[in-house]
Length: 152
Length: 152
DNA sequence: CCGATGAGTTGCGGATTGAAACCATTATGC
DNA sequence: GCATAATGGTTTCAATCCGCAACTCATCGG
Image 1 (cartoon, protein in one colour):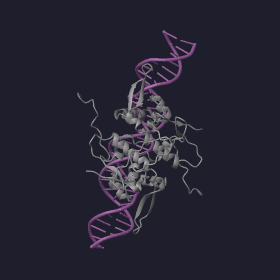
Image 2 (image 1 turned 90 degrees about the horizontal axis):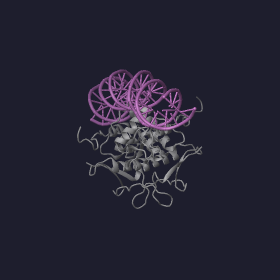
Image 3 (image 1 turned 90 degrees about the vertical axis):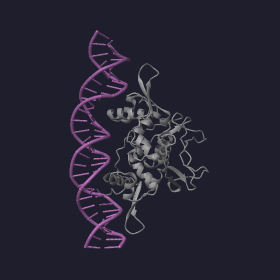
């Protein structure tokens, strides 16, 4: 197959016109977003990802391959010597709002009152404020005040 | 089983202290968030969910059961007559920021330039602005300027 | 050279999915 | 009244995916 070096034509999208569906086709399985979470928190090596998540190794191999294939992670030689490491690409780092909203939903709904959980803080140790979608004029938005505009 | 009406003790969390992991334990599979997306867009019936997503029926049955068990959807009798319908609970509607950030990531990274896709608009038909996480003082935040504070 | 660590690969049994068929209960056309 | 269809599932069965454990191979520290 000559000339097929660039982005694989691959994807057989679940729903080709919906950005939500496409994103989930790329990161919507049990482990991928946890790997992204850990990469954002400093994990770089195979073993470190495995230790943090407890994922099975063959599955970890597969997910790291897919993430690099989709260019959410890049594999490069570590600065020190010849060990390999996985680092987030720009697209991978851009999943930050997704991981953050998942985290905030979990904090609101998946813990009993008073139950301890980890939390996200900024450089000063101040908790990160909650995300609140708003319209251009600042009014809050939710599922009832928005709608999907179909295309095609 | 008397007195077992309230929340099942159930969950065997992947990572009990991490809100991201708990959220993914509840909605982190290939279909659940697409069902939430469609519920936000007005889907209420078994058949409508099936038609929109193309999910296999037995899986749809299972996911709707789990979503109602976790109280993200509630099943009630439709206003007209005695047909059943599934509606989002407050917790389910609160997933709006999650679905929105997934959508916005997809729009930025999962479509070729110029490729058509659906988009979210407010009541006036104006596109919903992009979510940008910020600290309390308004400075932008990302994975590099935040960290997880562990507990316990 | 020896043992430890990192990064996988392989094999296998069990769980999860998907496609399609089947079923029961209303609705609808004639 | 009867055939037809739609709704909301359940069942069956094959294919796939996942988790676990064992194994490989290369490097590193001493």
